[in-house]
Amino acid sequence: MIGKTLQLILEEKGTNVNELAKKIDVSPQTLYSIIKRDNMKADIDVLLKICVELGVNMERFYGDYYETYFCRNEKTDPDGILEKYYALDESDRAEVRGFIQCKMTDEKYQQKKQSLA
Image (tube, rainbow, N blue to C red; front, side, top):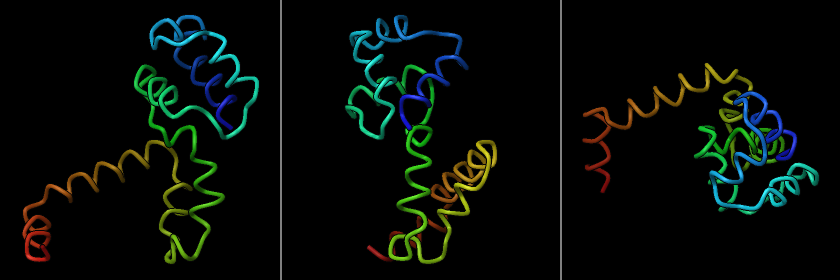
């Protein structure tokens, strides 16, 4: 859930709610509320500010949600690729993202993309 994840990240980064609130220009009460509610709902603008300031991917907050509701769905992931991705640890996920970014800039991919357009 978002609240527990936020609390954990704050501890990992050695910061606290008041410092983060000041840096992202929201009230500390807003962040305390997110932590206390600890559900899957948060204002997207606030969550994006949190991610940017703390240097984390939005996936960090929603990984469990995606895995449970999106990845294990044959309509959205018929080959189980997303489920396999979310089974990786963060280091391996970063490697996969790097590979994909590399492939997206690959000349062969760009040519194929242009020929389909």
